[in-house]
Length: 277
Ligand SMILES: [Zn+2]
Ligand SMILES: [Zn+2]
Figure 1 (cartoon, rainbow, N blue to C red):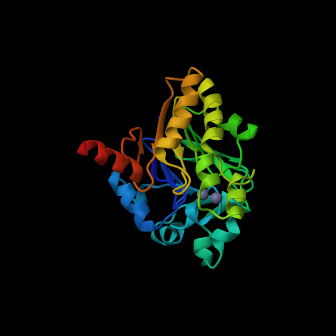
Figure 2: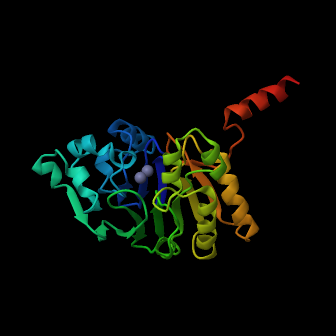
Figure 3: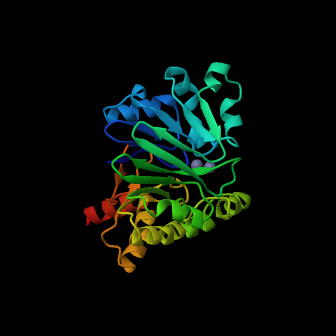
């Protein structure tokens, strides 16, 4: 059986723990080594329990902890050969030797088989991952994608658990403070997946084998956990997928949540106002 836990998630840093009883690996390692270690400790683990890190792409929110992690614990870092130069830049030969690269790859790590698949994003290279355990359980991770490709769907559709990007609410992005070129970049086919587009992909996955979906990589400025959850939940429910478990990855802590009573400043004000009545 595969357990999937996000350690932290969002535009400030991403890290997901995938583990069986025998094997533990990370997908990405953003923020810094201390944040990764603190999150692992909260789950009763340490760096030395990890067998590998699978990197999706070279953007800082996915790799910024690796520099120190690679010095503290020797383990294979798997990454596409297009993203690898950024990881290897300025490293010693010994550190660079930890970096395993390929265009697309399938690796056996303990009792986990790990397969990469391409995703559309404005990085040098970019992949999602599918994990299959020796006992036949499956999980997938796909974030940072401009649109939901058939390839992504075909790779994720047999996964029991999926971590999926739900980056922005379209109205919050369009009306928000970001400069126009940045809005265009996020909305492009090599940008990030909106809540609505994520909901469409979730419906396809729920119609196949996916039982549990964790929404991830939410924008701090252009989304709220509640907006992402309610958008996807509504579309799943409208399409008869009430039994699909849905949660939202926490931004700075391990785990995901389903309760959004008090998420925004405005809601705090509303709650205080109603409490005062
Ligand atoms: Zn990115
Ligand atoms: Zn990212």
